[in-house]
Each structure stands twice: as C-alpha cells, then as structure tokens.
Length: 346
Ligand code: ZN
Image (cartoon, rainbow, N blue to C red; front, side, top):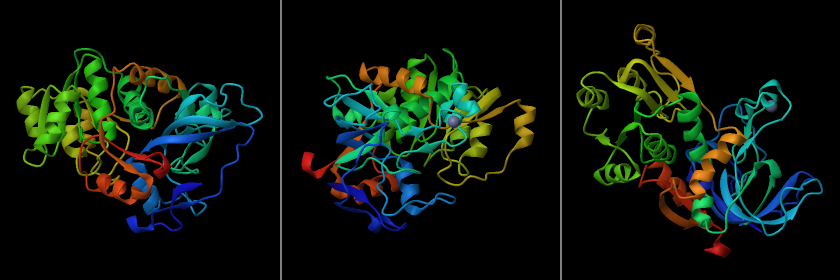
C-alpha cells in the first residue's frame, strides 16, 4: 500500500508518498481503509523533529483521518468491517491515576498518533479501537477526517479548562488556523462575545462567518490596543492563544481582571516574558490544555456530525502532494483545514 512517509527529519523535501508495509491489526486494533485525512501544525513539528521524541523511521505522519473499517483485531468487539469511523489521535494508558480519574489527556504516558506513534496518512492504517469514533452515513469524509484534533482541542480549552459561560467575552488568536476556527465556533455557540484575529481581509471575513462578532487584523493593528478600544479598556474574559512568544504579552494585556489565558501550543516559541506582575495584580489564570478526554471528543464530534460545527476546508490535495499541504500550513495560506486523500481515492 502507499503511505506518506519520511526517512529523515528536515524540510518539506523529506516527505515522500510511496510503498509502505501493509498494516496488520494487533488484538486491540482496527485497520481503517482511509478515505480522507487532514494536516495539523503538529505534522510540521513532527517532520522537522521534536526534542525528546525518537521516531522509528521511516515514519508515517498524520493525526487526523476517517475511513471504513477493513479488518478488526481478535479482541475488538465495538467495530466490524464496513463501519464508518474517524480517528481521535490521543493514546492513553488506561491505568495511571489520571486515566483512572477520567483525565486521559493528562495520562503520564500520553502519546499522539502521528507524533509519537505511526500516523494515519496512508491508504490503510492500524489504529487502536479505543481511538475510533463512529461516523454517521451522511457526514462527508473530508469533514469526518479533519474535525477531530482541532475541535477536541478547542473544546477542552474553552469548555473544560477556561470553563466559558454565556455572556463572557473570548478573544481567539489566529482564527484562520484549525484550532482557531474551531474555537471561534465553539465560543459563539456557547453564547460568548467573540473577538478574533487573523491576517488578511479574506480570513477576517471567514472568521466572521464562523461566528466572530469583532475581527482584528493583527498585521495592521496591535490587537491588545484594539481589544482595549473595543471593550472600553475592560479587556476580555478569556484569550485562546496557541501562538506563544509573539503574542503572550499582548494576550495577558488583553485580559480583564480575573481573566483566563488558555494555551494549547506555542508556534512562535515557548518562553515569553512571564509577566507575573500582571498575572498577580490582575488575578489572571494561565491554563494549559492538550487534546481532550474520550468523553469530550464524543461531545464535540456529535456537534460536528449534526452540523452545529463545521471544519472549513481550505484545500483538498492527493497524499502525493503532502509537501504542498505542509507548505500551506507553514505559510499560513488560507483558512481552516488542509485535507489529504489517498491518490487511489482522489
Ligand atoms: Zn494513563
């Protein structure tokens, strides 16, 4: 079978689409005939190489995919061949104190398919049955294959970690990215007043379509000043920040007294000035968040399957053009998700 893969870490030219051994399901695994997958920024980090993550090479990347169950391992009872499924990429041990407490994304050995483990951007992939979610017949493969990682991440950030309530104000940075455009939709659906930043007129219009009440072009305007102006110097209750060093000081400055900054990533670097003076004086909370629990995944994907939330597709490419998919992500071209489809299905 064919798979996206790389045999060394590096620039986009390490990515190939070629022959790879056919997956065999372990007892607790399911082999999925992949119909569509999607890129996440994580795929870029994994390709470049992450400190402390030693991958067996060649590595098949990809954390998001959906398809049809082809074969099931001996111990799998929840799925059978022909079932439509989507991958949820977080792998937890099920035994540590955090897993036993129902906080699987805090598992002491938490790993992510495609990042620490073989991924799913291939014609077929063996995935633990616990990492599959049923997909209704009327949901498009591109939706089923692109929603899971970003919607579960944004859902946990806002609903669980920041614990948003109707009537609160939420600023979403980088609203054109996968997590950003999901966060705008989730905050809007929760009845919040949504502020969103993006970098072009077209992206700002897309953010409005996703539910943003106010949009700020961060290339031309200083977003902390804009938030001060738009809120009468009060600030917002919650900032969703996955940008990191480049935005963190302005994110803190954008918060109202008692506000919460919730972060799931640090694309521009992990070590901003901590701003402790602002944190204690304004009684702010800085909250970390990673992926989601299986219960949270079920909750948010139910709302994707019924159309409440919608992953926006910026481009659909055959898997042989995975390098171009990485380029779209790295250059922040377009709005929403980049979908990849096995060339045999394209
Ligand atoms: Zn665990």
